[in-house]
Amino acid sequence: MLNRIGVIPLVMVAALVLFSACDNVVDDPQLGETDLAVNTIAPEDSTEEINADNFEQGSHGMVAERHQELIETQEALENVWENLFGHRSEHPDVPEIDFDEFYVVFASTGGRPSGGYSVSISEARHLATENQVLIDVTEEQPGEGCFVLGVVTYPYVLATVEKVEGADYVINETDPVTRDC
Image (cartoon, rainbow, N blue to C red):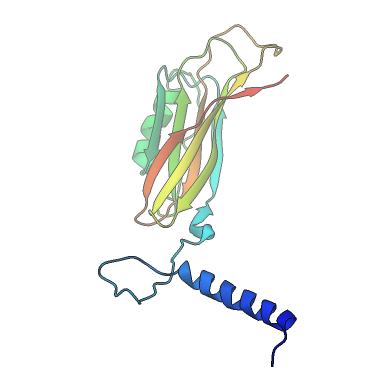
């Protein structure tokens, strides 16, 4: 015969088993009232960081408007390159990109009133559940104490981003970051 002290732990274990089973009961008219369903939660690792490499960055790109673009061909990259550097008497050669493996993301801030501004691809990640690649573009601004040149600048960045077959690519402009000097 169980004494009173031995019954309490047994009752507590039974209650825990009963209450944990209640979390899995689904009130669904298509399931019978006594049927249990397993909770399916998307794994936390369904978001995977992917490689993004800022390969060309500067502040004199001469693209007057804020602009973001996913470049999918070498020809499209050559057009963007010409817009960035066509105003110069000499400009760097267009890099050859393996568009079977990568896309190129182009982002520019448009004109800024002084030096000290920049833009970068701060993060790229694949959301497996939606099959989307989210690309974060972040502008950095000079803080109040920063010494900057009083010349209009046109910050830009070009970055390779891994190609994920069939994924939709979304370019997301994050809040600007202010640099302390």
